[in-house]
Image (cartoon, rainbow, N blue to C red; front, top):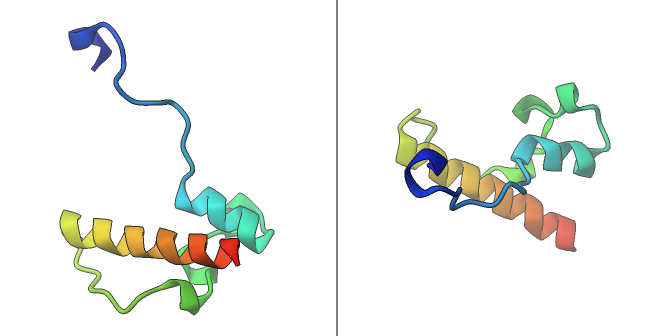
Length: 71
């Protein structure tokens, strides 16, 4: 993007799900996989590998993690 506009439109700060899980579960980064995440973080959503379905699934996972963290 910067080559077209002269500056990047996005911030460089982020929080990814795996790092958030690592902090919540107090585990190593390599151990912060879906397999080791609590089932309660996952909604019953289709896992189709289609972009929209994957985005919805990831968004729901992050929201569930965030709600638990805020409790």
